[in-house]
Image (cartoon, rainbow, N blue to C red):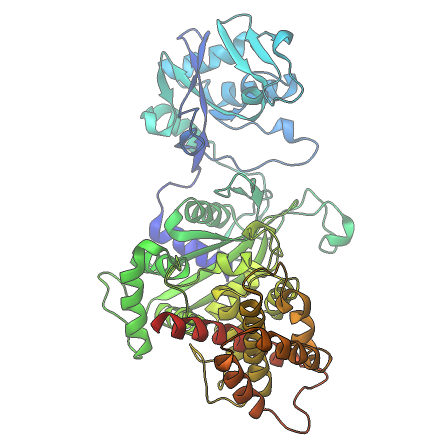
Length: 575
């Protein structure tokens, strides 16, 4: 299902023909007509990481792996091992490939490239004077047969293309004879079989292309590959067999479509360690832009977000130019690892239904907030950050990002690990802020089917015991703060909150006795005593403080504390 959907995406939006692909290239080897190396030219801005590479349409690099990877050279673009001869075996492989494909091509560029490889790998010496153990560029290499210097980092990690007297040699160059030579050489030695994606009989490809994530922390990895360990292979399969019964055209198409989506910020976003890719059927991109706006809300889009939310809350969908709410919409969540890419989930639905699920999530999160809140809607990455000590999304549980997005988009229960994560941070002493309270409110509604205390602001009429206890704890804490004149380093919040939330019976008798002393210190404690008496009157006279609260009741306790906090200070500001 995933591969068929990506194949349709390629057919709808194909920008490159089979046998070609977009690749990020950092440097060019500028050679003369006789194949002499004249210089190494950076193609992007070396001082800017975002523009340090240039995206070019180049011959397909199908991928290489295993002990004999050095035998697989790429045409017209490769790393320093193949192009500059850092590894003699790799250079020899590149030489054979280019001379084989360009032997019958009589053009200036073809002759220059074949002469370059025929001359032999550039000789170089290392300038040891610049060696520094703590610097990546530990060596600077001086090429003997050219007035060129290059760092070790660029020689090993950079991707090089050719220039002949400053003119690039590639698919965009317009050299029809070189293009024809490459396209006519596109064949595979694989056995003919029936492709599982298209159903057509064609050569079955062995190695699938790599997927290039648009992040420095995620390298190029295949989506489908053969595992070297016998225990993980299909029965009777060996590493030289195809990874799957997929034809060469379908394999190229799904890799090209996936790489194109990953390179477009309007069709992907990172959620923790995972990346969510999304697209609508057909060529249009308005649906993806609308989804990006809602799934990753920003402060600058407050008006547009509010307008969409108002429409959806009335059971309607707004009119947006070019946006078709009935279109099929695809969501693919991927996570890279050491061997191959993992698929977190794949979801297909009508675009309008996905938007309703997304806005329903924000409605469950809606809670009273301070005036200085930055985001009108709480983005998923902020939710993940609240489960960590460092408040960094990258430190959240690796699986939580994908689980959270899946629950939101499918209108399913939230992952219980998210609830545990928030409760643990609150027990550890974290502030009960808007985001934490909103998450608890949403989980109480969705997972525990709670509706009495999950209002946006304080529900003064609720008699829910856990909710009232949370309100009461805030009153006792605030009474202590005023009685001390704000001179306390720690309050009952730091000392007793975690126990009061889980085991009220062990804490409330103590803090209530303390509150009597705090009231005695105040000249005017009427407001606190009145509110305290009202809340105590709502509790069961026989058993006002339970020995333990369930997970759902602990959430109600925290929500009552947060609601009472906002209500207390809102009234004070008004007065």
